[in-house]
Amino acid sequence: MTSESSTADVVVIGGGPGGYAAAFRAADLGKSVTLIDADPRLGGVCVNRGCIPSKALLHQAAVIQGVREAAQHGVTFGAPTIDLERIRAWKDEIVTKLGNGVGDHAKRRKVRYLRARGRFVSSSEVEVTPLPGDESLAAQRVRFGHAIVATGSLPICPRLFAIGDVRVMDSTGALELPDVPARLLVVGGGYIGLELGSVYAALGSQVSVVEKLDGLLPGVDRDLVRVLEKRVKEQLAAIELSTEVTALEPRADGVAVTLRRAGGGEDQRLFDRVLVAVGRRPNTEGLGLEVTGVTLDERGFITVDAQRRSADPRIFAIGDVAGEPMLAHKAAHEAKVAAEAIAGHSAAFEPRAIPAVVFTDPEIAWCGLTESEAKRSGRTIEVLRMPWGGWGRALTLGRPDGATKLIVDPETEQVLGMGVVGAGAGELIAEGCLASEMGALVRDVAETIHPHPTLSETISEVAESFFGNATHFVRPRKERTPKA
Ligand code: NAD
Image (tube, helix red, strand yellow):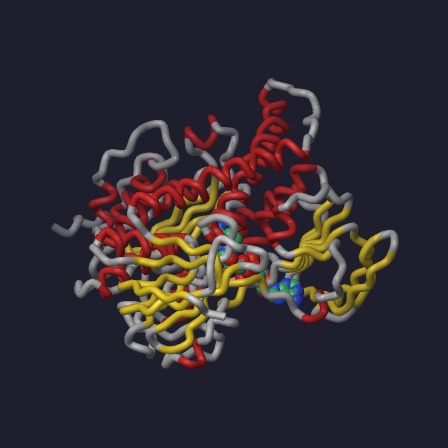
């Protein structure tokens, strides 16, 4: 029974990087804000079950791998001892610290945080249902001026995998690090499959990845993926492309998985655990959207305009629930746009470059226009590419397996996008974001003095190659006069 009611200028449903950023911005703009989320602490999937815990585990994987490789350069350590309980505790400490930090920010901004489920009962009212057993909060309704839906996404679990066996996990289950299975099957060669697959491989599992398409990380430029693929092949037991799982059978000694290859051929193999990482879907169930004017597209994303306003003028949507790419930093940016639009500003979500980073070893990062997208759309571009093989800093790190590329408009000479594969690609990409977003000319990048010896120099060096004047890199072409 709903016994109480309150009002808020802005109600935000979902407390992830999109939701909390929207709530904070709206509060900073003088709005009264109620933020509703059912998780034990704020931060959403990113903080609690996604970006942050996975990066903590990936860091440990990198340490293990780094120590292993140090032996090739004269420093030998013993084999690592894996204390799973301690690794888990360390990961959880980080998650708790960050989640509590978000909660503190909410308090300081006087955002009213309700740990509960929210559901629309009209275009101006949300019903708040406390979690089972929670006596501290009464069921209530909150009338709002505007609402922002930031409920994120959920892992896709095809029916085939829903066999009710704990050994078949999604990313949330895998991040719990229940054990180090001797044989792990990862279904899906995308972001999650490769990131978590490499964690388990570093901890000692024999990891096999099956991907139904003919390449890992579909959609990502193939030249970048090839560099990653070469290295992960050494770390993983098997990568099977154009392969699908057609059946799963729980047995006492493991999960028997039937694999079918596109070219024909089928076999059954036994694994101790299976990680299903075949994508995520927008989380709109149980939100009561049907009683509002909100509409969904054919993939289930809430349809929004440039301000992130849905078809219902009082309701906005941001983050994974409002469309691809499903990335935290895109959600956080949309959050500010939505809150500012609600406050009457002329904000719009019109980025030129949304970066994406796959935190594998090596990392892959890209932003703006990619070579693949340009090919698909028929746009004329010039691709500048430099492998790291002879690059000083890459050699001193023992990591010459990398490449930097810039996508340039040959007419305007503007930087349209950047791609990097290699150690620290996720940090390096920021320069490409700035250049693409500002519409920088390739000359701006070429003439910016980069610190030596760093990997960032590969960015100015590759830009110089546009003019045929790169010092360490011969790219035969006629001299060009930089545009003013
Ligand atoms: P994904 O879309 O990256 O990869 C899923 C992969 O599974 C695809 O390659 C797809 O072809 C394959 N696939 C689908 N069905 C299959 C099947 N039946 N058998 C074998 N392969 C199959 O999805 P994900 O890895 O689950 O990640 C979901 C989303 O989460 C990503 O799109 C990304 O936006 C986000 N994410 C981001 C990061 C990051 O920013 N570093 C990390 C993890 C997740």
